Image (cartoon, rainbow, N blue to C red):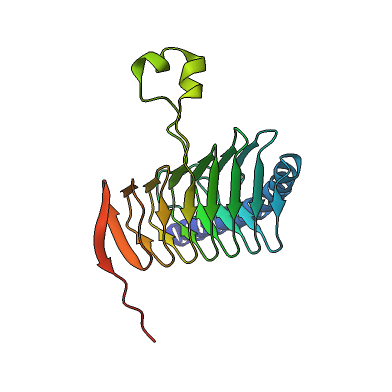
Amino acid sequence: MGQVSNLKINMFHIYFYRVSKRIFRAIYLVYSRTVVWLKFRFNNVKVGSGMKSFGIPLVDVWLGSSFSIGNNFMMCNGKYFNVIGRQQSCCFVVGNNGLLTIGDNVGISDSAIICHKRISIGDNVVIGGNVVIYDTDFHSLDKEQRADPVLDLQHTKCVPVIIENDVFIGAHSTILKGVTIGEGAIIGACSVVTRSVPKNEIWAGNPAKFIKSIVKTS
């Protein structure tokens, strides 16, 4: 009888925990989506219809900069959503009169996009967990210029990044300044992309290199 009673108590604890977790997550989703709406609104982010946000991103759009998002945008932020390791909230930073545009039907998880000039992301793009996209070097490559904050800022290189439609970027990849990723291309996980990728090709590695062409099936 004692074992049966202990089993019932354990099952009750498990059931209570699972129900509580679902209730907490439901409440958190309502709260987080309200906070996301406020963050986008006060940062003057233009957002299309059908956005879904799981968790709360960091959003920092400087005066004079622009950030727009198309329809059916979905993002996951933090340790509770799309858990694949190295969890953080998405970070969208648009500074120095930068222009960040994200198209329709784009999904992104726990990633950072830092735009100081222009970053353009097309339609139907999938951006895996912990991806980072930079259009800037952040600092001058000259050590003497780096020693002076004013000169460092003046000589920091910023070159646009363009990600065309139907691109898939694997988790933990880094996309650096001046890169164009062609339509339908795939970037393998943990890649560092330092040069442009033609459409319908798979690239991977550090630095990313051509792996193979994508054969279209009818």
